[in-house]
Structure formats: C-alpha cells, structure tokens
Image 1 (cartoon, one colour):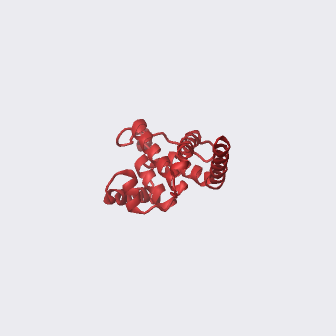
Image 2 (cartoon, helix red, strand yellow):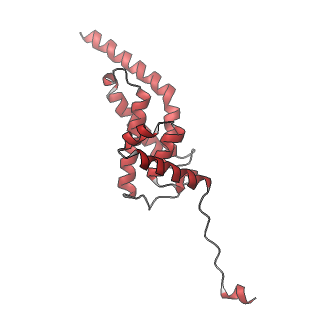
Image 3 (cartoon, rainbow, N blue to C red):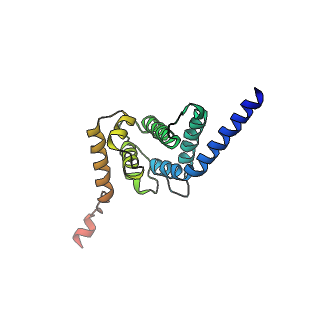
Length: 166
C-alpha cells in the first residue's frame, strides 16, 4: 500500500514537472502582460504564476482529463481579477505606471485583452470565466484595442504669459 502511494506520488510529481517545464514560460508571459510589469522585472507576475501553479498542483489528481494549462490559466486570471479589484477598486483608476505598453489599460481591459488576443480564449469562454455578459467582454476588448492602437496624447505644454508677449 505504501509503495503504491509512493509510486503514484512520484508519477504525479513527474507529470506536473513536465507540465511546468512546457507551460511555465507562456504562463509567465501571460502573467507579465496582466500585471503590466516590464519583462525584466516582474515580481507580481512571478507571484501570480507561483500561486496559480501551486493551486494546479494541489488539484492535480482531481483534473481527470481536464487540460491543466486551461485550469492554471483560469486560476491565474481569476486571481489577477480579484487582486486588481482589491488593489485598484471597482474601476481601476488609480493604477501604477510601469514601463509596459499595457499599463494605459484598466486591469479589466488588460485581462480581457490578454485572454482574447494573446491566449485566444473565445468571447463566450472569457465571459463565463469572468462572470460578465459577452457584450461587456466585447466592449472591453474593443476599448482596450482602440487604446493600444491610438494611445492618449500627452498633455500640451503650458503657455506662459512671457512666451506670448515675446
């Protein structure tokens, strides 16, 4: 009995290690996009990925034919959404300005954009994962895409009275 459990645990560890070796690079990239951190310094993305992988490992035996990548991505997205809600509030207005192109997007827009365009998740699946209507997912994705294609202009320089009279 003990030998059988040890063999099963060793097999599970090998399977999970193979999964992590194959999927962790892409999942880390997804986490970096979600957190809008720079590719060379991304502690929040690493923590997000570590927690998602730990959750997947804890439920590895219960996957029963489910795709572990999909399960890990779902947990990663859900954890990011909850953290963004707590960190930035309902509307995500007070967000940091890291050096990423995606930093101009609100967390929810970033989440939808990454799931839809980078991960290739269908609108219906994204809506189900995030618990929102398909129309809302479409609107968030469209707004995020428009913001990336046409970034907001920097403020115009102020004109002083001295410059006007000269």
